Length: 200
Image (tube, rainbow, N blue to C red; front, side, top):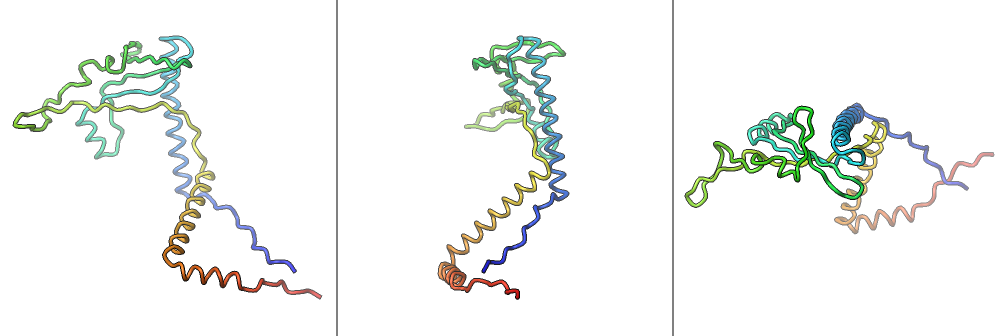
């Protein structure tokens, strides 16, 4: 006597959203690779081989930051200082003016007076005195290279998330309804095994 076997389920197929997500990720990966390569070229020309892009500090004007937040567009940096590292962990910082690389002792030195420049109109009152806020926000972004997932891989991840969500929901129901869960489990254990019809 053998137990009936459920037919194998076909793997989930990518949706249009999966394909669109994969396309967007691919574009981001290509943009990051171009930026990484450009920093690598600048560092190689200025310092020689062995210096790998680590990231960038950049200043964004408060008004520009607000505009980007409302429009969803990328904020334009007012100034940028790049950081590269070698295998020994040493770091070098530089800015690019035109096509010329200018090294700085630190990212703070690269920005100079811009780093703490007060905003011409914005501020707040503190103990009866008007205090101006900084004109720029200091931001940091790492340089990373990554291989984006395909639509098929994103589909598998989505299926896994959905399965785990179902498992968490089932567990929550069992925790909140212990008597019913125990009765259901007992009924499943007591149910006679299904038999296949015997052929002559």
